[in-house]
Amino acid sequence: MWFQGQVDLPGNDILYTLKYEKHQTYENDITEWKRQGYTHTNFTGDMHVVKENYIWLDKLAEKIGLTNCVFTFYKMSTGDIMPRHVGHFNTYQKLFNVEKSKVWRAVVVLQDWEPGHYFDIEHRGIVNYKRGEFVLFDAYCEHSAANIGLKDRYTLQITGQLPSLEEV
Image 1 (cartoon, rainbow, N blue to C red):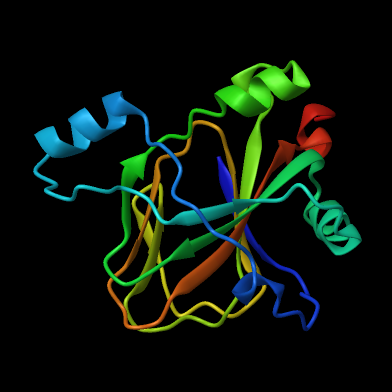
Image 2 (image 1 turned 90 degrees about the vertical axis):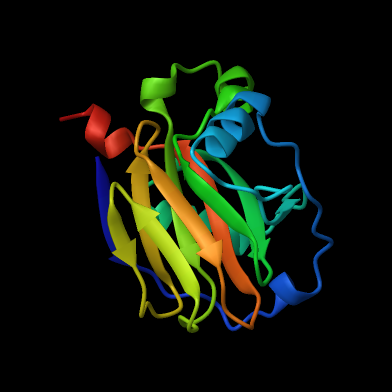
């Protein structure tokens, strides 16, 4: 299950000053992608896992409807790809002691769309987006992303729980 929405973002250029690092991809995922024909040696962008307390991030998550959140800024440079996959969420599940079925993720775009920036959710390509648009999806949605453009692609991943759906 997934939804699209829009939120106002503060006029904040913090994403350009953060320290981004590659994080390890699951070996099973890499094996599957290579079986499918991908030839990359690296299958991810660079991440900055937020450890600081940015109040604006909590407010943003609240507007989207998420609680118990962790935040990761994600930068994809030219040529970075993340083939179709379903998130694992193992760390989040351990941290908050929840089942995978309770985990949701919002991917918020932090800049207007640029040619070559791509996001796919459940076989629907999303392009031509505006800064502040987001996709909110459950832990079982297949998704992918790529940057075959000439400018870095920045997003914010907010992983949390969606209490409004639990009440239904």
